[in-house]
Image 1 (cartoon, one colour):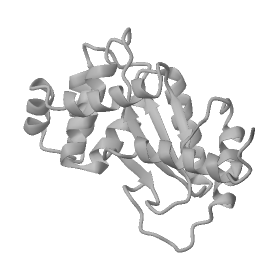
Image 2 (cartoon, helix red, strand yellow):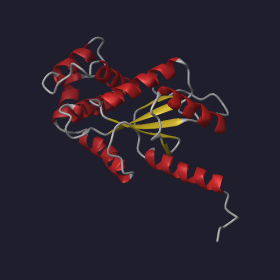
Image 3 (cartoon, rainbow, N blue to C red):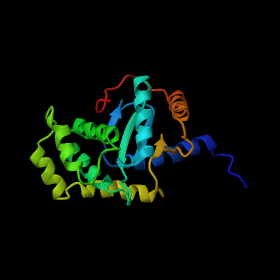
Length: 209
């Protein structure tokens, strides 16, 4: 027997909203319009080559003025020598400045091929020095004292709650984007969600893109 009083489309929308609310229950770095009708939540690893590719897609779509908000979640994978340290530096930088987080985020992907566990700290210091983005002594103290681990672990636990083991794993308005294999598919997903959920008024931006 089917309950014909339940609208399947509404039921799906409520389920998606529930997932999206759970994904956004903890504050995380974000780029884009805070009031955008399209929210992309990405679980990523700075050492992951596929995350680098997704980052390049986002850069292209941002240049095209696609209307979306990107929310970043840490998921450094075991077996990647410098991924967790990079996440710690990024999380500690964010505690001082949202812009500093995104500066490191972009730096890691731009220099992914040359970064190692041995040179990571020195190259981060050089990157954040000109112009100065954070208090370097506070940053190093935060990283070496493992103050960022709580924040990173919350993201990892959230990933495990949703059965996420690989990066990048992407949700678009609460829908897991397992079929987002090309930039065109991501572009179409953004357009479809924007059309289905138009943003009523121009909002203020979150962290600068």
